[in-house]
Image (cartoon, rainbow, N blue to C red; front, side):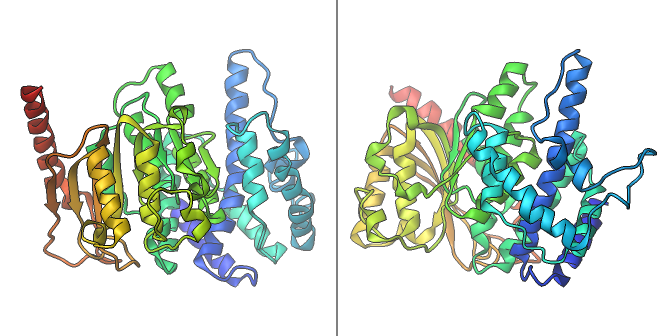
Length: 434
């Protein structure tokens, strides 16, 4: 049902003069979806409060609740066609009242880590592009059919949302910008093997694939106590994202995966001088796929000891600096990083090998990133000891990867098994030399 609903919404948006691309479809579906999600979340919280004899105070005031403006009901609990806005009335309400109201939460929220602040931030970034109020009414009716109440419903919804992000990545000039293949992400997480209590960071968060998969990995890693569940929700997953649309999609993706108030900040990670990073700012785990082929201005380069305009090389310096001693990383980067002979690349490799134990390199085939004809490697390293031995694994497949034939988890099973063997061997060797 969910899949057909999303398809129908795309068809409606395709007809609307305000939406011209797959990017617009995802963005506009996201804000309506988010408002509906908030309504279901509040219903769940109210029910939970009532069961314990407590009173629940709604985040959203009555006039702006989904059941008031989007789907008013009559006394029999049926959709009230008389009260329901449509056409210009609906569009004017959304543009002139709903969005300004939701934007204000950014100012009134207690802190940046609250759901209220995220609501304010999302609606400060977005605007309604659906020009026809009749199209908007149709979309609202479709999204009202969706439910976010059970874990199964949320899981199915997050799966479909990921599919939309994937399509958006394929439609853009750079597929890797929005979408890292999920089999690759899950493989990286298996190798890095984060634990509950680790602080996990992605400074180029995009659609938050790494953080969503890390959340699922930790949530299902064992039976969590209430305290551990709270740590996973609030003190585990952190990200930064420069681009407005990717930031919104990342937050929405995490929320659909079950993270209530994602710790994602809308900022340019590279605008921060890495010399200003203190111990309190550091993380136990870094998982990331920084943008390929980006170029940074001279003033941004000043924030780094190794000057280069190559975005990914600046990100790598940032990641090394922001890792705690003993911290672990899995980072996707262009394979030319291993062989470039320019001064910056040579210096960066030296920095990595002297400050970190680069224990594993996974060399991926072309076509891993649909829409981006870039060859990539994954660097797995731990900070604090210099590199002595590197295990290099080249993934050779008996088929060409592409949009209709993507990378899958089976392709990477051999790598995961052999990497574990290598890891266990190195642990034994290090003990024998200590």
